[in-house]
Length: 371
Image (cartoon, rainbow, N blue to C red; front, side, top):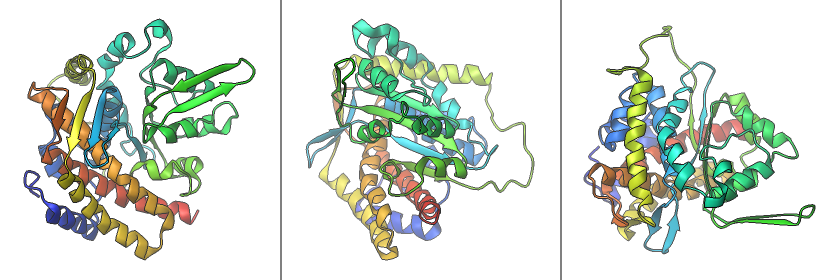
């Protein structure tokens, strides 16, 4: 597929091809056309599933790190931050641990965020990475200090499940607000304290088994379900491979430290600007709409009413992913400015990823609807 030559028919045919062939992993062309920091870091992973999981996690992390980055819909004239929610669902010991390496990509950004990312008077309490095992009050406090920004990366979905079971821990409404960067307010009668967060920009990536996921989501009618990017698979390994799953010319930790250094230079360039706006043309958005209509027609025909919301929200996911990719492309070219247009290559890659997320999500939907 030629990512550099995009039009409406290409996107429609792309959607039809992806569905017909039931694409299950990301095509090699995706990795060949990624911005350099993602392209080079993904090469470390030799296993297909682990490479895909790492890329998903990196998009979640970078979408949360660059907190002054926005997609701009030129038709609706609406800003949208690129934060994502991703769910990796697979059996134990099947490569989900690759998600943790995505977190390493922001190791130095995390340190810089402690200086620049939060309210000056609350530096001791701000955290870019927020644990899933946190009370609702703690979540509200951290997001308030962080000006709404935060990233949750957990290798066990049960961490969030257990927190949500507690009266003090259920913060799913905050997560749902984050998808469209809605505001959030909370008032405690006991203390008389009113907390208002102007925009929630929370990103989240969770991995776990199918049973763990069902404990979290329970039903496709859960409002969080339609906001997720899904990557679910069963292990089909026939050969035990404990070594050689990652390849690099230097120590693994040293490799990711070098990528973290590159990412921190991008962050410094970003926070030097008040706001970074990635514009999407009406033609680009029409391309996406036409492709998603192909999926939507199938969902209507199948009668999967609850999954319709996933397809509708997929439009925003394409814009979010394309924004992050386009931003990283501009960082590669040392040409970061406050405003630029999304590249066709970025939106084409984002479209492919989201089509695959939807196909995985449809399978997950089937397991929930027959639970």
